[in-house]
Amino acid sequence: MRAEYDFTGGVRGKYAKRYASGTNIVMLEPDVADAFPTARAVNAALRKVLRSDPPRPRRASRRSA
Image (cartoon, rainbow, N blue to C red; front, top):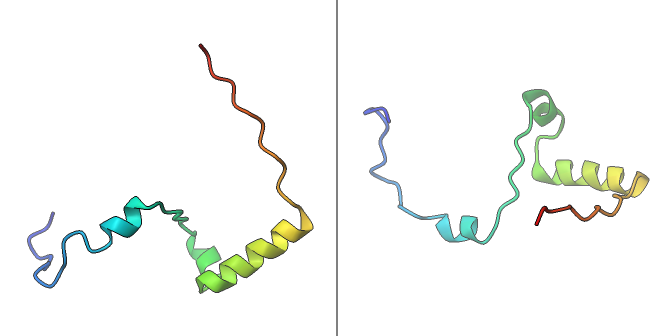
């Protein structure tokens, strides 16, 4: 870590509880982020996609014994 990073105002573990409860972080490519500048815009677009083509049930994975 670089010496010039100043963490004096930081709070250790501030988001740890929220992260531990589960996250679903998706990284958008820059061109996509430009088209959908807010989480609300992304969710609205994804809901339209889901209405036009509902997800198919997942097949059970086969595990070797």
